[in-house]
Image (cartoon, rainbow, N blue to C red):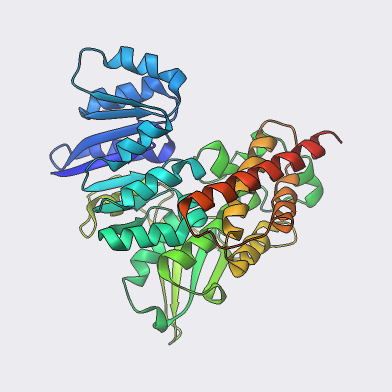
Length: 386
């Protein structure tokens, strides 16, 4: 049996992973589960899977978790340090699904201990790509991308030499505002922005899809994961979300990976890799798909793509600053303190105000992240006072 650890077990990716694990009880053994503050949901998952370790980041939720798990031989860890300790526990396969920069340290800890690391936290790679890749290389950890686009590229690329590539194409649905005017987006509410037309996701990633910052972050992630230069990375808007990624080779041929809009498909691919899990109900019937549309992204209405590419070209700590400022700006919008179009303007202003020196250590990455959050918070506060 494959022993597994799920960092971020109560988020959408974590829940989908648990659903798959429960379908194959003789194949996987859950060792570790972590959550941010959902004590009851974490306890339910621990009891259902017989996990040995449960870690909860928010200490205020710890008493409820301890109460639910009392009298059982389950180790309960608390706080950020507890989640970090849980990430260090042995497992053959780890799902890194803690949202945002909060997942950086646990993801890095998992990379340092070997095995397979299924990477759903794009921010960990964006914020500290060289550190994460170096740690994985030293420990012999196999990084497998869970994001549907990167997983699609991974499958289509099939470890062919990067030198044979002309470009990698990441597809984007276009989100809820694909056809909206700038005036309509300026009036957008959080409820409208999280209403993704194709995917069911958490609030933060749904907003990133609406601004297309998710695709900007994914371009940076693809550069790091596959070692492909920025000039060979492209984005296509594909509203049906059935083609998830395309690899174009020097001879002009293209290989695309298609699949249903269900994150359990790429998760299952990483769970069983290099084998496959049978998911009988997940079938894409091309005879019923109708027309598949592709169009170039409109960077005038979605400037996040340009801002993210600029950060990738700048290098150093620019991607870290980009991610931190975006998290702050998205939170401000969700709290109705600033507008939808303010998100990218805050990110760009934060990038322009800070020096993007390359961080030499993880501590420096954290310091840069904190500085960017402080600046972005001040910018959001100034906008909310308008």
